[in-house]
Length: 281
Image (cartoon, rainbow, N blue to C red; front, side, top):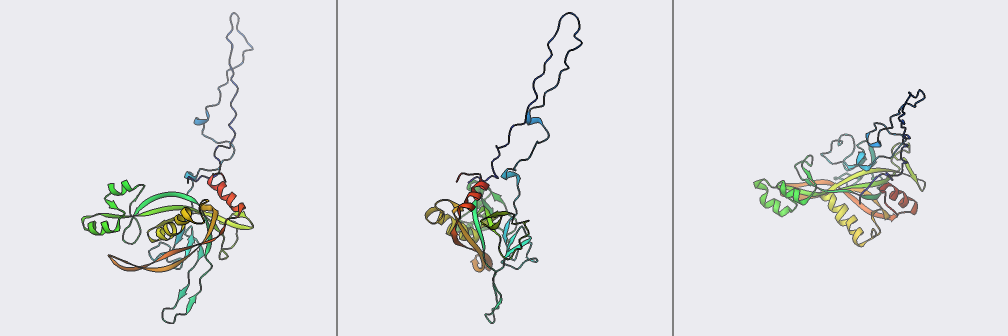
């Protein structure tokens, strides 16, 4: 779905100056003639704006929701596996268990609650060592044109000849409900509905996260489950867990999202989400 911030066509047109002309005279000079007044330039050439307007979605860089991985830039600032908003605000921390004793050394904070407003973009990201960098393209054709494939088995066979491996990358626009972990300062969580506070964020999912979030949960429920009325019609809880993986390059672990259906979206929140998305209810 295409997402925009409100109605961009609601502002009234700026007034235009009345046309003023001089009627030529014959004979003696007319000492009372009115001077010619130049009209305002057309709106497209003006360099100022009158009043206020809401920006278009394309004019906004949204803060992001991230899972802190071992390779993350903010790994020294937040516990691994944490959910962080805008690389600054801690939303959730996973449980920590002593592997020797099996005892919990740090309890898990409650999962966060979110609503999926819509899909910002569907693209393809190159999978590179360390998970940072790599090419991002808009189509499967572009994947091929850049010497890549989405097929893991094909990549295994041809990687020695330089074939690149690409994965699905989906950017979601989500509405996050303020968790108890975050103080209510009215700065980050500045939308209030049903007595609760919310904020907007972009959330990019790829690789194992794409499989868990999109294939197993959102896409499934959109096709045959609780989201048949649309992504925003049901809320979800989000936490993380550490999962092991085995690849051609060896074994490793990564923090994966755990997304679970929560409850049907209230009419008040649903109306607000449709206002954000600029779509009818």
